[in-house]
Image 1 (tube, rainbow, N blue to C red):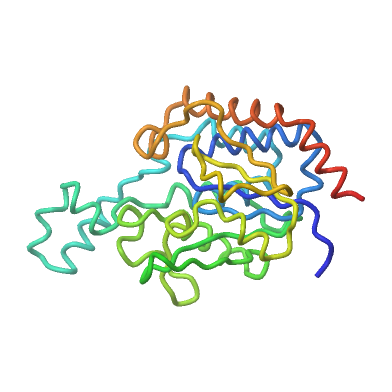
Image 2 (tube, one colour):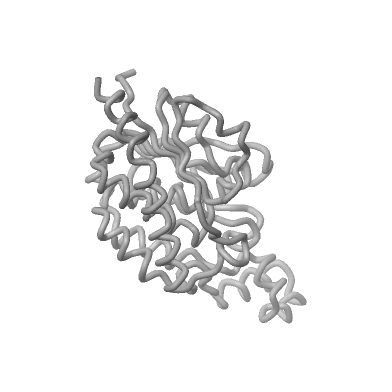
Length: 274
């Protein structure tokens, strides 16, 4: 195994991922990104991992600032109806109801898939990338996929699987990767720092999408935590809430919180380059 430099850990959190884009902009401003040679992410963290690795920071910013609610929650009505009637024609009456949508996984990832296809060129990747997914048959089991080991098409499926919120996307069975069903990586490990450590990284930068991460879990003298210094919301007010004002606020907060840690981050870079 070659010498690892710095690993970046990206949490899951839906629309709160704009904060991570701001962190990446801050790391770029500090000249740190070339020292980051491994990135792991759960859920939106997996999506950001491939964006950061293959796109320049201005493109990542543009993607996040132009995000619309329908990009995250795109309702595929035809899919809802087809899924319900295939199971039992009686359930077709639920096709317009909230629970009908949920039980059939009627919110489509088509917009997210298009976002990846339009902006990510996996051939340009230069880091080791990992995505965490949760087994659809056992929510306590997670699996780490090294994206570099797969074809571009399978890499995209893995990222979509890692971002597949249960019952919202892909119903209860999840996304299919190599014949097995997987769901959102955040269910089993939302901030997978120890999984990146297991791949050989000893110096890590961990980006949290909560204001109060578990202090025991994050205590580590070879890890720098970047934690939102302001409120970025819960599931309803942050994860699935998409507004241009909030996306911009989260992005700027991520950048500011990163720049505040300039001294610590530069020290880590110096240590990694020795």
